[in-house]
Image: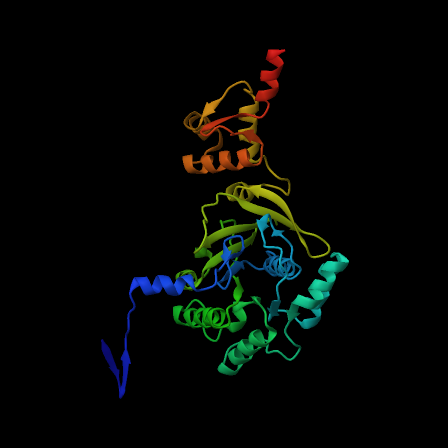
Length: 352
């Protein structure tokens, strides 16, 4: 089939699926980099101001550069990789001052790896990416760095019009996606949302969210409640499961590293009336099983009895039961059967 564009002819060719399979078999295998983020993909880390997005990304970037095997309880492959962090929001001095604090917490071997693999842009790098010359500079800088993973802070500095205007957002996101694909890099772009005013963080928190979702392979939300509780939330992943009912709460220490405080329900963290951690639904579930340690429950019975206690849907309770069982907090070793981990103690005592 041919389409005419002026004096040019474009021929649209197709290939048989047998050839497509053969071509695919010869391509290198693409692995997961971290969490639901596939290598050589492009996506967002987004949230309101002062939520901790930049430090979250810096910690992840350094963890990748020095070859750690996990970050925020999600697996990394442990192989040091070249990372480039382009910070458009802050002065060079502010960023490197914070990076130096992070650097000083590392072991001597990790310091050598960070010196070798963690790169930042030069002092003369443009503060805004808004015209063709700026975009060429960005492209060439990433290409020349040899980085496998790139972080850009932030999309706000690429706004040449109105981001809430779909056309402007589409142009920026398309260019970033093309950079990721053309240079075979995993690209994280930081993006700001308005204040959430106590609401959960979702893709709808972003103005023009449909465009950002369409062009992204992944999205991770970083939020801070009105009571200043910070947390990370998996929003969506194109290449991995994103059916997660929990968020990960964290604090930022004096060395600009994030301390993961554990998983919690987003609605629970939003409803806290003070800085103390309220009773987690996990505690309610554990208390339910431990109050009757000699009783076993089928999945259906456990769900029916827990639902009025914790106010969640069947699927959410199933997620809780699975996670608590995997962590050894309750006993779910028999498929579809749950009980207190104190069951064996009671059983053993009765046999004496």
